[in-house]
Structures are given as structure tokens and as C-alpha cells.
Amino acid sequence: MAQDATLRRITVSNDDGDVYVESSGDGSEVVLKTEKVRVTDGDVYVGTSNVGLSAQIDALKTKDDVLGERIDTLNDTQIEIRGDLDALETSTSGRLSNIDTTLTSLASADTSLLDTDASLSSRIDELNATDAQLKATDESLTTRITSLNATDTALKDVDDDLSSRIDALRDIYVNELNVTDKQLIVTDATLGSRIDSLNVTQYELKSADAALSSRIYTLESTHDEYDRIDAEVASLIDSLNATDAAIQAEDSLLSDRIDELNATSEALSAIDASLSAQIKAVTPPKCISPGGLKLRYDGERWNCTCADGWSGATCETPLAGTWKLGEVAESCDSACQSIGYVCSAEMLEVKDTDVDSAEKVATLMQQEGVLCETFDIGQCTPCGADTRVPYTGTISASSAVVCTYSSAERTKWGDCATRYSAIRRLCYCHEDPGN
Image 1 (cartoon, rainbow, N blue to C red):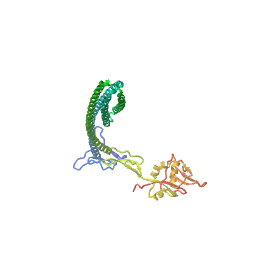
Image 2: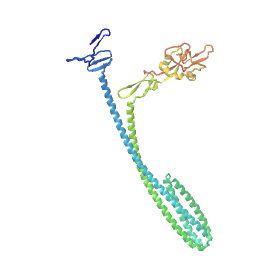
Image 3: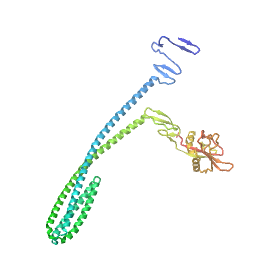
Image 4: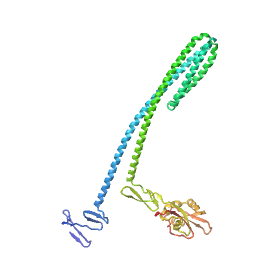
């Protein structure tokens, strides 16, 4: 142990080992007292703080544990959401496969209708050949013609029935069978045209030969064939009706599933909103300059501390305000007070971009009833140092109204209390943040 009177200190050292400072006995303690560090009751205190380093470390550990628990909860929630999304994808794939199968069945039915149309066309070609032969027949076929008329009426009824059924199918499957519907409409028009041709032929047959009785029997056989074809078409229509019923049942199942998916979506939206709120609570906001001063954590969330004249979650919103033209030799404090607002040097600087061109100042002056005749940037000594800007006055030599605006090199802004003789200051006035 050595004492240095010049430096006013005592040095304890041991070149061969450690140095121990101990105290014994009840209530005894070792006190290290300096302006920077002190040790009391087993804890270390720095500066003027009343909270020891050990206590501060314990508090930080407690906050770290709480944050760890919140992160674990968020991870568990993410796993649950991923499971729900996987189940949703599996169910949707199955429904899409069923829809593909249904569309394949509709395509098969459409092909069958096309085959039927081809068969009808072939039959009509045979009738045309028969008509050519009947043109040379005897007039004695008048009684047979009556029978043909009856047959023709029956054919028209069949044609009308086919048209109504085709129209019904078109209404039901307008989206799925558009191509087939167009083909059926064309076929129907062709049948009508050919039936009209048959009517003309029937009048010509009045001069035909009686020897064509056997031909009439052939036509009657043809009528029976039409009946058979009509039965086949009716069977196809029944098959399409059954397919439609199956599609409607499948549509009902899909609607129920969509309702389930919508409910799941709403639940996921609620979970997402909850997660967003939790993340927002632990994520510090960005305090926007110049209104935002600093971040502060209140134990639950981060908050921005705003400068005077600014508000909002990120201090992005300035107080409401307006530009006011003062009277001659009137201060901005007085001009703003006359309309119930206040003036601040900080807001004069912030709002300088409103008066940094002749056009902007001219507009503001005109709103205050002043028509600027010439413009200036003030006393440029140096440029931007004129703290009176913006203002208006008159040039003594010409009596012209001059208005000043801020320059890009501006480095100084005026205060609110100063009065200037012979000019009227344009002042920015805003709400009192104290109110």
C-alpha cells in the first residue's frame, strides 16, 4: 500500500497475486465511494442512478422472457394456419377433379347429338331421291296424297316437338353447349326448308302414276323410321336431364364447400388481424421528420414523441394553419393573434416551401387583397439572409407594389415578434399546440 499526496490517492497492489478487500463482523461493509461508481448492499450504482446494475439486468431479463413467450405464441399460430391451408388445398383439388369429370360427360352427350344430326341428314337425302321418282307418277295417287298430307302433318309435329326440346336444352345448357345449340338451330332451319320443298312436291304428285303405290309403302316405312329416331332423341333428352340433375347436385355440394371456405377465410382474416396488431405493438414506428423527435417504449408498445406543432402516430401531421398578411409594422405574433392562431419560428421554417417562388407568393398575396407588380428576394446580403421575407411594400421611386419570396439559398428565417417599418409581413399562423 502506497500513498501519493500529490495525486491525493492510495494505491493497493500485489505483484505476486490477487488483492482482497474484506470486512468482518455484523453490519460491517466495504464502501467504494466516487463520483462515478459506488457499491452498496451488494449492488453497483453508476452516477446519480438509484437503481443498481444488478436490478437493471434483472429487469431486462424479465422483458426478454416476455418477448420470448410472445414469439413462441406467434410461431404456434403460424403452424396452425399452414395446416388449415394444406387441408383447404387438398379439398379444392378433389372438387376440381369432379368438375372435370362432369365436363367430360357433357362433351360425350354433345358428340351423340352430332351423330343423330348426321343420321337425319342421310334420311332427308333418301327422301329427295324418292321425290324425284314420284314426279313421273299417275294422277290416281290423290287418295294416297291425303295420306301423305297426314304423314307430313305428323312430321311437322315431330319437328315442332324437336324444336321445343332443343330450345329447352339450349336454355338449360346455354353456357356448356353453345356450339351444339348453334348446330341444332341450323339443322332445324334446314328441316323447315326441306319440308316446304315436300309441300310443293305433294302438289306436283297429283299428276303422278298409280303405279307408285309401292313407293307409298316405302314412305310409310320411312315414317316408322322417324318415330324410332324420335324415340332415340327423347332418350337422349332424358339422359341430358339426368346429367343436369347430377350437375345441380354437384353444384349444391360446391356451394356448401364454398360457404365453408368463406367461413375459414373469415377466421383466417381475424387471426391475421390479431397477428398484425401484435406485430404492430412490438414493431417500433418510424417517426417522420421534422415533426418526430424520438421513440419511447411505455412497457407495452412504442410511441413517437412529437415536436410542438405536430401530431399523429408518426408525427406526420402539422397543426392546422393558414397564411395571414399583417398590417404595416405589425409583428407576426400580433397578426396571428387577430385570427385566434399563434406564430412559431419552427413553423415559419417548415412552411418556407409555400413561399419559395414568385408565383406562390403572388397567389397568397392576391388572397389577402394585394396585387404584386414586381418581385424581389429581399436584401440579398448574403442571399437568403433577409429575415423579413416574405413581405410586401412599395418602391418609393415608382410607387410600385413589390413582393418578396424565399430563395433556394436561404439560411435564416425571421422570428414572430419583430416589427419592420414600412412593410407588411406575410405570416404563417397555426393552432396553439397547448390547446
